Length: 269
Image (cartoon, rainbow, N blue to C red; front, top):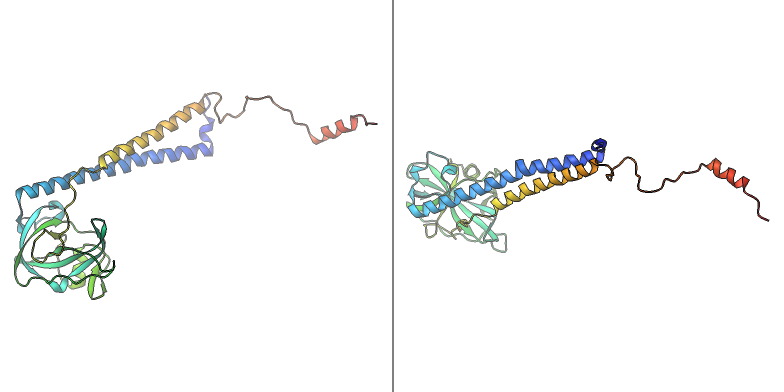
C-alpha cells in the first residue's frame, strides 16, 4: 500500500475539512440540540406543573433568580409605576409584528419588579398605539416567572414612548432611575392592566432530539466517506497514483530529432 498521497496539499486540506466538520457535529452541534431538547422538556414540565398546582406567593421565589423558577405562576400585590414604563420594540407574536408593554411594579415588600403587561400591534407596522390606562392604587396580579433577556442597549425615546430592544430589567431601570429586580413577570389573561396576554409556549417536544441525531449521522457519514476514499487511494491503481499504467507510453521527440528527420527525407520530384 502506498501512503505518500496523504501528504499532498489537496488531500491534507480535504482531511482537515472532514475532521473539523465531524468534530463540530459531535462536539458542538449535536450537544447544542440535546441541550435545547432538555430545555424544552424542562419548560414543558414547569408549565404543566404550575397549571396543575396553581400560583404561589411571589415572596416564595424572590430569594432565588428567576431562571430557577422559569414558568412558575405567582401572585403579587402592589402598585404599577407608570413613570418607568417602556415598550419592547421589534417583537413578533404569533408570526405578526408586536410590541410588548413593560411596566415596573412596586411590591408591598418594598422591592420593584418588571411586569410584562402583554402585547399590542403597532400602527402601520411602526407606531405604538394608545395603551390602556393603568389601574390606580394597589392591585393583585397573577403572572408567569420569566428570565430576562441579555441585550443591554440603552432605551430610546420615540413618538412619546420609551422603547427598549429587549426585555431587560436593568435597561428599564437605568432609563427610569428605578432599582428593578432582575428578570420579569409575564401577566396572565384577565389581570388588571393587561393588554393582549402573551400566549404560552407550545407544549410539544420539538424537533431538537431528531436534529441532534441528524448531526451525529452527518459527522459519521463524513468520517466514513473519508475513510473509504483513503483506503481506495492507498491501494494500487488509485486515482492519485504517481504513475499511470492505463495506456501505451508515447516517446516524445526533441526539436533537433525532428529537424534531422526532415533533412534526411527524400525531396519529392
